Length: 483
Image (cartoon, rainbow, N blue to C red; front, side, top):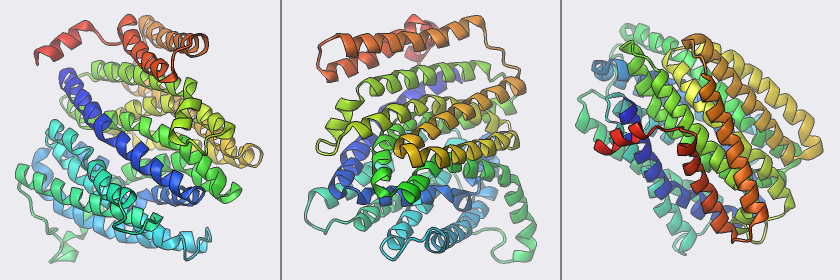
């Protein structure tokens, strides 16, 4: 399983590094630079769409991924029923979010059509993830890896036509619609590929007789409820900052936060890839009553080394990076926000590993208690800090909350799986962190190389540190090479 994990995580990272940065920094950043402060409203609406994800997904993706990976024969039974439930949930999600935005948050006629399209996009995103959860649940990890960036690849085409040609008038609404087209095509492609690997009906068993099928539907809702709460609470404490900032301080400050959050989100892509790959693997190991410690240890060391290396490199190069991204609009305010927010990448990455393991063990309710505390902490910190520090306050709130959540997930896993960190493991983890900080400080502050050379050297230092501190064993790579 460790070999399979290494193979697929390398494939996932390679594919996503080829495609997703082009969309994030070529397309999305280009739109922000083009529309200016209006992007702050777009960013707030997008985060509002994320906040109501519980209504859109209700934990179905995680529930389905775990159960199909353990019981593949259940796919023909689960798929049509869960798909029908997803369409019902999507209708509720779009309707209630629009009502909340209009009557509670006070968004007007200019913002609501854009929000509607963003909500439709989230429905399509969740549909794609649901379809892919069946593919990975059946054990086709590499096919799932190849499909992981198809939506962004198509968005580069559809959004690129909008931005770089004069065929259509540019607006944020048309930008969102270009994403809709790419997501729709992706959903169709993934569905066709799933059909080639499994035989299943599309019509739910209760379509003809609701009374007879009602117990099965309610049973699925009950089983997916803990997963739904995880989705709700995790999105709440990660997406609350932008909405509160835009409402309390205005779209200009939300725009500043968005420029820093873009880099954080680009980095978080790697953590999400780890989680999506690990969930079916952890689930299968637990079902077969095999130890999860080797896979957990390897994935933690890899994500720790990667997140610390990338966060430190971006921190020290933040001024040059933002000047490259936003030549006209880069300023000290943006530098400070990014300098705080990018460090949230490290605890977020750690959370991805341990929360995925707890999800595979079905310990969602224990996680949810800490997520609730995390929401309260994030809300309190934002309410206190935004009036004084605006976007810097939101970034600080996000960092403190993510550190708390990561610590809580580690503590839960130590209790649940009786993990006992070895002295060598602690030395490796802390030593790597200190090594990277010292090396990057000397590199960026005491040498006269071009910043791009320094940035690449900082990433190479992470690779060197990976072997220097034995975060990845030579035997693992030899096994990978033989495969």
